[in-house]
Length: 405
Image 1 (cartoon, one colour):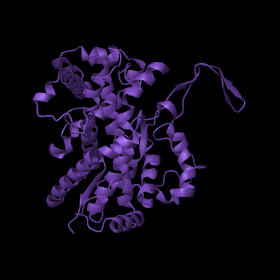
Image 2 (cartoon, rainbow, N blue to C red; image 1 turned 90 degrees about the horizontal axis):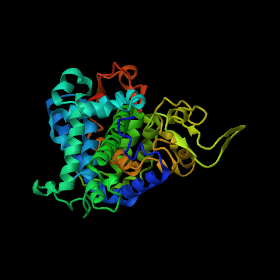
Image 3 (tube, helix red, strand yellow; image 1 turned 90 degrees about the vertical axis):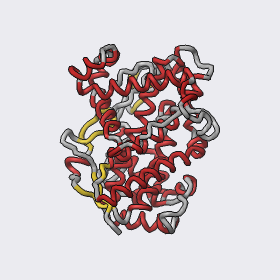
Image 4 (cartoon, rainbow, N blue to C red; image 1 turned 60 degrees about the vertical axis):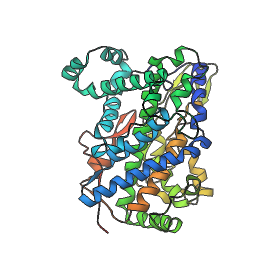
């Protein structure tokens, strides 16, 4: 759907997909993400520090841009020898958020006409900027990913101050893959650029949207905000104290319920994800689906099913409590990360960013945060499917202001 037919996301053959996925698996395991949580926390801390500057100037914050910058820094720090440093850029690097809006906005066209993206990449810069302005930002970043993968392959990052062993004592994802025993095509620059687009995109837009929606719903509901703040202030009495580690945040019941409700109401991927059983028929009620039949369903149909989740468009963390009984039962219907052998590779990373992001932002700024210039119908309600859920075309962003204490 994104002009990346050889990426891990688009790989159709089961054996090839398994081989490519296994090459990444160790990096995205629960244990690896726990070790990487210090990097996530550093990004959350930097985000909160930047919020402090916005508070002093009383400048409103576009949460879509802010969280895109944070999640973008986290995932690129993991993938490449150097992160993009988006949180260091003015106004939370809005061009980076616009990149993913552009890519996902063209997903349906690219799905039907996959030859369009490779054709665009063959054009010179001036032609794209003049005649294809809507695709210019995509073109620019695709060139950047190719440059990064090539630099990683050539080892030129070593001369640019990047510490190869700074991530938990081991190199970045693409450094590891380029040194692996994968077949030559799987390690080619052209194919890894497709994986870079897939991983950086999946690690940026879906998690940032979830964080922005979650922040909006919490800050807009005094009851939810009060209960969350009570739990966070009990666990972390001082907002300036060292944050709780990820393993301790996972033990906070109301924060965990909020995380689950955010995943439910933000859907993860909204598009139908096709699955094919190649060698046997599937029995579904009175229907028999022959081998090789593509089957797909949107997470929206499950997450908005009122028989499972009453009042599905209402943000209600309490529906997951108590976690040990009701929450456990409902989690089998939570498919934001999909399920099975093709479920989201970065599910543990995304879950950790949600817990740490919500805990860090609200412990420090929850009492001062006020939603401003944001209308639910126009700016918050999910109205379109661009592979990921998207607000309507008139949406302006989700804004908050941090009031003085």
